[in-house]
Image (cartoon, rainbow, N blue to C red; front, side, top):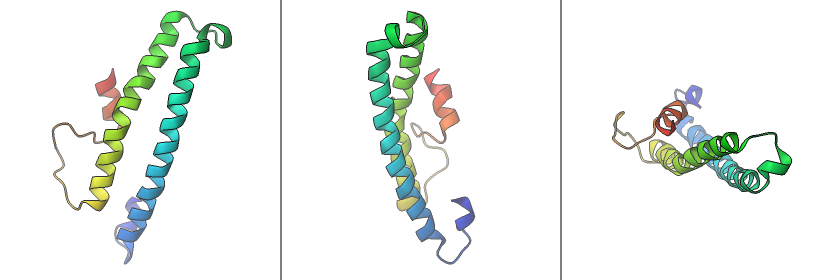
Length: 103
């Protein structure tokens, strides 16, 4: 996506890429919610996890699921909304930052 910035129709390519990313993000969110539910219901019979390990995985899934809508909205605003300040309180700037907040 970053390589399309200097081309003549770079804005259109970035928007097309973002739309694809948002679609994939929605699918990933649905998958994460479904597998979280399955893990919560079937961790004893279908996995080798202890209760604490299953709880840790569920907590991490919950943390990422909580941050995903904000990350998707930020990406949408960055592409469609024009320039934005680089540092804005409450905005998720990348996934690694999300993981630092979640832990």
